[in-house]
Length: 626
Image (cartoon, rainbow, N blue to C red; front, side, top):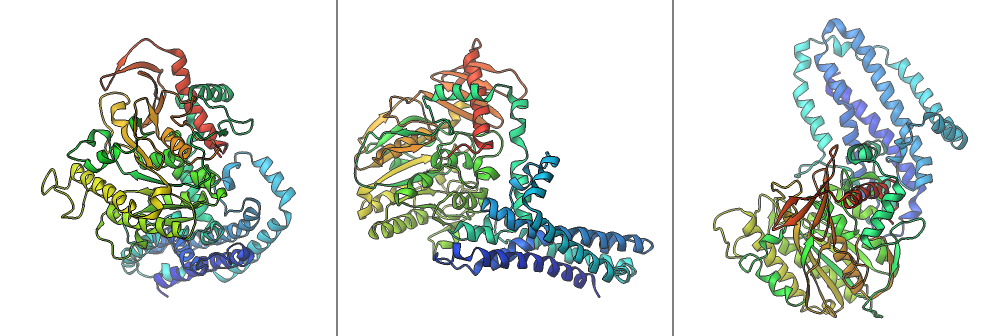
């Protein structure tokens, strides 16, 4: 028997355990997705990909031992491999058993909650004994039976292979190593497969069935990385309630008793219509590029809607912009909420706000939606549909990051028209990708500023061309008159500068268009959550939400921004800015001519900056943003 054959048998053993668990989940929860218009049999195909990732990872150590262990250590290596596979297969049996009570309790496969309370072993052990006696008994019985058979039948299972000449065994390492690498990556695209690959349908339960429990837990641990526990140590201490009250006062927001920022907001534009909402989120479109030469189409639109002269992004990454424009959330310390475990479901978005009113909600993107965990986040937070690269038939141009912005614009108008014609109101976010390094764009669409170059100026020119094409085509379609449109950037193309927080590089364009939107310019500070709240105001309904910003038409609107730059935070109120940096004293500055000038400490403003960090972390950690 060769090393390849031996490892393949154990691969099959792992896949079989996963398959049995998935079949049982599939049957148990079949009625939760049977009536949905989805191909639920694909759950097993995508599930095999997730299982292969895990199995390939677990076979790396056996491959190393089998190929590099010298003959004189054959007995020791044989014992190690038997023990290794006993533990691995036994643990997989346990995980598949544990999936069922966890799924029953939380309606998801095991995630971060599965390990979150292991720091309290006595309490956890007592809870398991009290509530899960039968599942535990079944699991340990199965593991005991498996262990007895395994140890009985594998006494010298690896001896023959380990006694093969070392030179012959080493030859197997490279080809099998490559094969395992392919299995771990499980994708020939730009990005390796991850948990988002299991989110192939619009039915959340089916997506959960498709996942792999061990991978789900591992990914959740990786995504969380315990950052929330470090916030007070890094930035400073403050009682949580004091922090919340400070933030409420600064934002002019007072929530309810359980959810500190969820409140009822009265619209200024009352209507019986169900207006649609379309947010066209622009990749890396900094305000410095808003010129007649680079963005002529956007500037033409500027005169026809509400233009924000002083809008700022939350942070410097796309996930921050997505959270700001779809959820109205500010930049939480650590990884953005789009990529973190506790916000993968039951986190507020405009979808959770509008779906109860009968809206169809969607995310449209030209690239692979697994990037930055977007597909998982959107589908996990109740979006009905994710459109990505694979959904474009014969695109006009495919760049490094996927189908071009003009393809995205065309796809958007097609989907919106179809929904409108069917009488279905909709809310959508379209995320552009052409303005991203290496800035490859199709020829013949623009007269480039820098001819023959792949550069940001040319890419933004093309992004502006796509914006213009989207709106010129949309105006010819019936849905246009009943839709509120937002064009806004996620962040600047490159945030840099000498200042501790380069505030000028957070400046982004923002525009709201639509029937009933009076052309005007808003010259006070605005955040991405402010823009979202204003767009929702234009929908004409009184709605409850926790958005961390206000409509510009509300008397609660404050002249305030919170900006995150790496691990630094800047709270700007007017032209005064408090900056907090991990493990350093806070400082106060005046923002003057695009630079920060140190001034005397404003202790209250500095405390408020800390309060934002603590409050945002608390809202995420305790899952209070809903």
